[in-house]
Image (cartoon, rainbow, N blue to C red; front, side, top):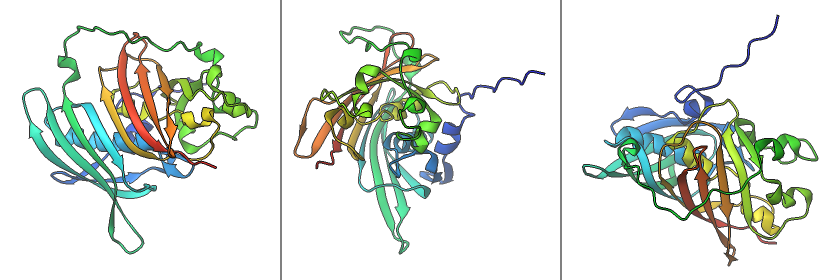
Length: 283
């Protein structure tokens, strides 16, 4: 007898939803256990952390959807218990603004702030349909012509816990680093989705902008590229299906680089944009 196909996870019932779920302790204060499943190079991924705070703010603010979030990464987060503290800064008819901090405890039991976010929320479904843009979706080969972690020359050589939870298929034109031949162009492009089949929603876009390998790899650098600051603009609710993500770096100077990301859905819409400043490990 044939085995039944594994059911696709849905928004609200998936590993991503469970691992970003926060428990309200009191108004404005939330508890969470940060999952080790979203780490890379031993550090908790910055996009996952932003989604955690994004979920807490969605509960704390009167509007449901993230429009813009600016995050400053103060100290490295680690898997385990954490506290999110939120504050309503201002509320209006179409937008509300709040701030949130993620805190953990050091070995002496003292609170250490890991991440601070200032964000504005609204209702994506209430936005007008008018679009005037010169932006174009990135040209990426079909997913079956792109490559994931399982296709690496040495199995497991580019794997980390987060890659097991994502469907990432990288454009071969941005994979020179994996073969020891980085292009020097500072570009990374990929198809993005969740391994369990969950479709993307606005909170997932906060992860998508920071889920690809660092563009520093294509500049010939290796190792962790820690985020200093990350700003994300969510433009509309994504259509079901995989997303196309393009990330570029044009300037590496003084040990810092910027990464500009665009996220496009299957309907050909630009659904999210971001810019981050990251520290590059030189030498």
